[in-house]
Amino acid sequence: MNQLYEIAFHPDYQFLRQAFLVSALASLSFGIIGTFVVVRRIGYLAGAISHCAFGGVGIGVFLQQAILSAGMTTLATFLDPIAIAVLFSIGASLMIGAVQMRAKEREDSIIGAIWALGMALGVLFFTKTKGFHTIDAYLFGDILLVSTNGVRLVGILDIAVLLITVFSFRRLEAVCFDEEFVRLRGIPAGFYFQLLLVLIAVTVVLMIQLVGIILVIALLTLPAATAARLTTRLLPMACVAIILCFAFCWIGLYASVLFNLAAGPMMILVAGICYFFVLIGGMIPAPKSAG
Image 1: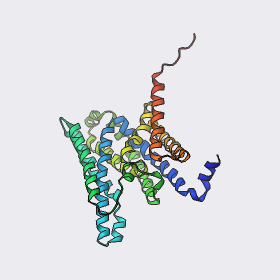
Image 2: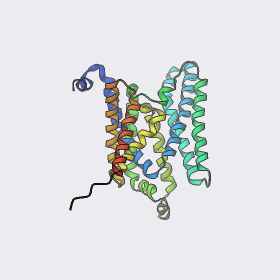
Image 3: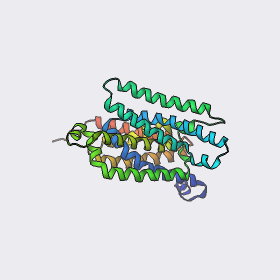
Image 4: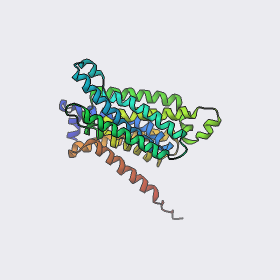
C-alpha cells in the first residue's frame, strides 16, 4: 500500500503516473477496435498492418536524420517517425483491404508478401540511417518513456475512434457480421471495411510506443477475445473489452514496477493468462444440480 501511495503522489514517479494515464487512454481505442477485429476475424490483417508500420518508422527515422544533417532542425522536430508510420500504414491498410476484397486466390500469400516487405523496408532504412538508432523501442515499445506529446496523440486517437464508432457503429457491426446483407441493402460495404482497416492502422501505429510492433496485436485482440467469451453482443463486448484492457494494462504495469520487469511484456502476459483462464473455464461443464 505504501508503494501505491508513493506512485500516486511522489514527484519522482511522475513518469509512472503518465504511463498509467496513457494505458488508460489506450484501453479505449484498443477495446473498441479490437472488438471489431475479433468479431470480423481479421487478426492476421491487423498483424500485417502493424508490421508494415515498421517500414514507415524506418523511412521516418531516415528522413528525420537526413533533415537534421542538412541543418534544418526545426523541420526535423515536426517530422516525427510515428507520423510517417501513420501515413505509411494507412496506405498499407488500403492496399491490404483491396487485396482482401478483390483477390480470388492466394490472398494469404499476397498479404504475407506485404507484411514482409514492410519489415524489410524498415530494416533497410534503419541500416542506411547515419548515427546510432536502436530499433528495440519500436519493436518492443516502452510505456515508461511515452512523452507528453505521445499522451496527447493517444487522446486525439480516442476522440476520433469514439466519434467514428458512434456515427458508423451499425454499419461497421453489419459489415463484421453479414457483409452480403449489407451489400444487398445498398450500403457501401467495401468503404466501411476499408474504414475499419484505416482505424486499425492508426490505432496500431500510435500504440507502438506502448508495447511495440511485435506485441501490439496481442493487446489489440486478447481483451476483445476474452470479452467474446463473456458476451456475444457487440456493444457489451466492446465495453467489457475496454474494461479488461484497462485492467490488464494497469496490473501488468504495476507488476513490472514491483518485480523490476519490462512493462509491455508483463501487460501481454497478464492478458494472455486471463484469456486462457476464461477459455478453460468455459470448457468446464457446470455441475448438475442435485434434484
